[in-house]
Image (cartoon, rainbow, N blue to C red; front, side, top):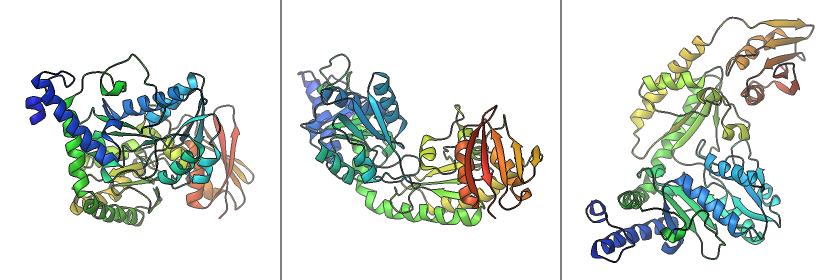
Length: 438
């Protein structure tokens, strides 16, 4: 309220109203810096978390251009980081993506192996936005520091739960992720990190975030971060119990489900699972009608019809993917109601997708399933229908031009304990070869 009453003036001016605005801005900066774990003069406010990422990456890459043009990112970074990497590569830089385990976590030794003499910047999220897996930031920061490479940490998903540990160099975050207002991001750059702001010079926010500060939103962002931090420890225990209940009960209630993400090293309020033989978009609509607002990384909920890059990097099932995010204050009664509704919603979607028997061509101990032109999850459904029609040791070739099939057919094989032989070029799309084991 004070920022609305007294924060309308330009905080860079010396008249009385400007000084009042400056006091509010400085207080917000100090509160945010305390939460981040940096000095107030190392932190600036941006217009979004995305702008913080883009400005932070571009500034460090430009500041260290004499060192080289090599950038390292993990394969499961937020799209804002990957877009920054694409822009860097388009401008002539080189980018290395570090893979992750099936739980979505990078291996420190794998990350360290990518560091080179010409590496200008390394990026690693503190925790994944889709599956909740927490990354070994402190350990990666140590190896980066030893190699003289700054580490940029996207902490948007985790900052509400506590400061990011380790000797990181640059940190970004977004206020809406902890329940603050949208349109406010944080960019912290440690002293000593070579940083060259890109774009036209601006006298505001140390030249790193141009434009007039949205003071009411900035003050609200700092106040909300302080508020959630005060309750974070207690709330984390409560939400972990609720998400653990979802992780445990969903496979018991619904057949053919894969719960993804690290079972232990994860954020308190996120749980993600994928259901075989389910169209993700249809399932989300079913749950929405029941009063549950959930998200998905399935390709069938995307306008690009490509599966989530996070699920793809993990090598897990993408079809029928559901991401549940429990906000601060979520109650156990709602979780129980979700668990009551989910089995019926999944069954209804599976019944809708039953469809006619797939077209098959028999070649002795092999079958060819023509799923061309059919989208997730139909190719996997048709594979499941015919796998029992070949003898043990026989093969099924699924012809598909759906990008999701490249991810979902191998994931189906692992879930159903069948052998995925590989993919072969076909006249249209690819032939995905599966050998029956049992």
